[in-house]
Length: 68
Image (cartoon, rainbow, N blue to C red; front, side, top):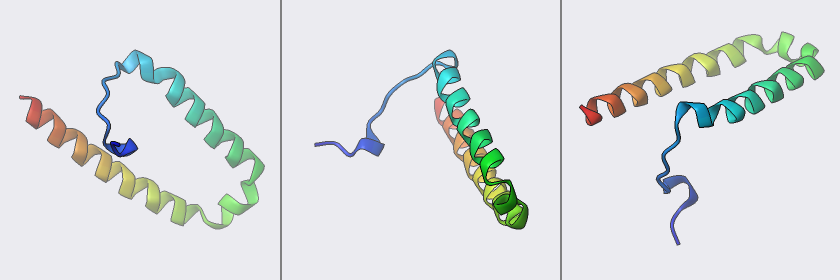
C-alpha cells in the first residue's frame, strides 16, 4: 500500500481553483471567529507564513529546474 502523501497526481491550475477557494474561505471564517486570538499571536502566525512561503517557493524553483 502506497503512502498517501507520496502518490503522484497531476492537476491543472484551473482544477486547483475550487480547492484554493475552499481553503481561503475556511481561513477567513476562522480569522473572523477567533479575531481576538489572532490579535495576540499575529507575530507567530506571520512567522509561520514567511517560513512556509520560503519553503514553497524553494520547492517550486527546484521542481521548475528539474523539468528544464
